[in-house]
Amino acid sequence: MHIRRRPSWELPESAATPESVYMSRRALLGAGAGLLGAVGLSAGAEAAGFLDALGLGGAKAPSGPAPGDPANDPTRDLYPARHNDAFTLERPITPEDISANYNNFYEFGSERSNYQIADVAAKMPRRPWTVKIDGLVEKEREVGIDDIIRAMPLEERLYRHRCVEAWSMAVPWTGFPVKELVAFAKPLSSAKFVRMETFMNPDVAAGQRRFTYPWPYVDGLTMAEATNDLAFFVTGVYGKPAPNQFGAPLRLAVPWKYGFKSVKSIVRISFVAEQPVGLWEKIQGREYGFWANVNPDVPHPRWSQATERDIGTGERRPTVIYNGYGEQVASLYAGMSGDKLFM
Image (cartoon, rainbow, N blue to C red; front, top):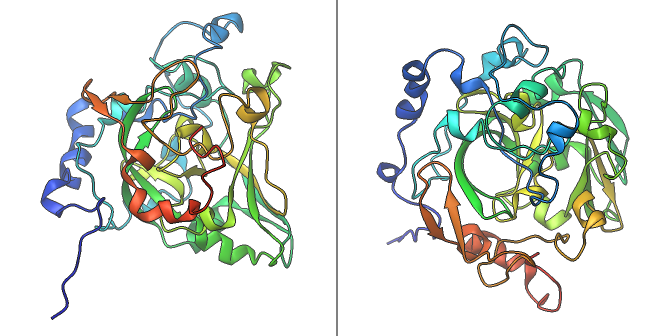
């Protein structure tokens, strides 16, 4: 008799928030309420007040059409995508109006709440948008984002998201496994890392005018991490194309790592032999390292990581090593006890 053993992260479907529940919330909250805000690239709180310094302060909801309005996304007919039942959660999905208005996206400012980031990010055009695939590959190319999205097997997954700043949320991402794009890129055997780079548009993203940050945003994964089943490229959220502040039209989600590893609004994916140095690692390597795996027992130099605040419920939860995904990813780091895996 074949006996199936459930992995630690998988729960019965009955334990997950039904898709119909979170999808119907939008109607109850009013049209448009769910299109604002962002899930964050974590970065620490040292730059607070930066948005006001740029003259972008003042919390207000965006009004009127904007270049970044996901309602005009050319791939909106693909949503909602098929839900993958293998990825369930033990906690409720964070309400869209909360996750969509609590973020870190330093290209657009340092505030992580209210409508400030959503308002500014919505001004960035979503199309045309291309992704350059280069480095150690059989053939370098530049591909339109719509061609990528339509060529990939879109699905919805429920993931935990853990910020280095010790807050968390639960998100219904839509996208495709990173390993699908790796296969499409056809990297050479000499490629050991995947380097990802975000957009550069200081005319819209005023944060990129600050010379104190080494823009554009860069971070990366090992090839083994990138081809792990959990590594996910995100194109949508809550059953529709992702708004700009979530990192549209293409962002990374690696749920066992702190959020600053999940590069947003990607325009370049390079296969390289040397370990990439991320933006936050370059600024403050003592606090933000390459690996950035979640661990309750390894504090940030300025705060504890033992617990996290769920922004959806306000509850304080114990942090779980690898954010609860250890069964799937711990083997990636076997024999690496000497490395700083948890910062």
